[in-house]
Image 1 (spheres, rainbow, N blue to C red):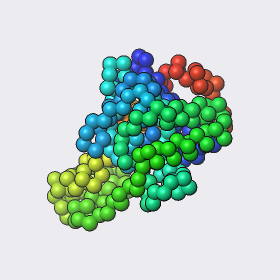
Image 2: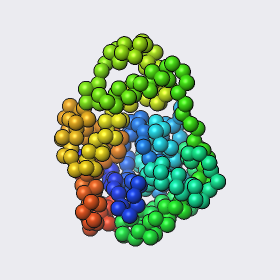
Image 3: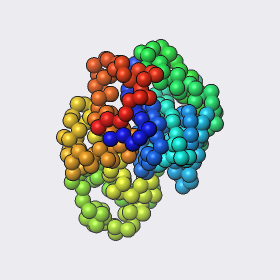
Image 4: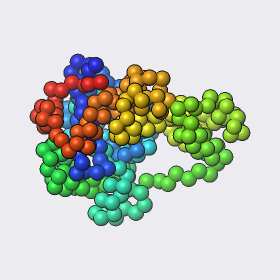
Length: 296
């Protein structure tokens, strides 16, 4: 059920492939430490969001952007009692790389150099992208996305460092990640995993956290939610998706999914179905989504 006053919509627009979209107002919502496969470009309209990023709390208020690169662990919570309201676009690394190659001089994998940017103009662009997607204006949505990403990269962009596994601990962490991906539904214990890799549990724990920013169990939860999203996108029922990725039942999926994605899996899947059916739900159009509560 929705907490009083908290609203969110997480969706895709078929004419913006490789981009997720979000509008939300959160008050007591807390996002656990997690990652995204895509970039996060969150434009704050009201209130303050606090998110822990690379060892420090970052504060993004009205007129500011919270920017997170792919596979970068971070959290999220309200920084003021009234919470925060924002719109966000989540372009894939491929989308950002294509825009960067055409409009910037960045070489290598492009990304954001800082997690917070005070730029009301781009905040406005993000909300215009969401409005264009709501209205089915593909030309405007695509154009505004390219302008926004280009501006952000020019103001706050650069090449992302390459992750190179050199140490024995790093190699063990990479092998452990591969095992967890393969055995997601029935993972080994930390002790068994370390034993199979020829290391100790605490050594593996340290190496894994150093390599991926999360301990193995938290990384596994994150990975399960990512895979559940793919299953939901393909039409798998939430209860079946929960079991397939290793959660005990759908309530466990619901809890973890909402704490990472921001909406329950049922609501998430319904929006995907709307895209697949090429339909725009009238109750979710711009100007009316704010009155729609969370749905399971």
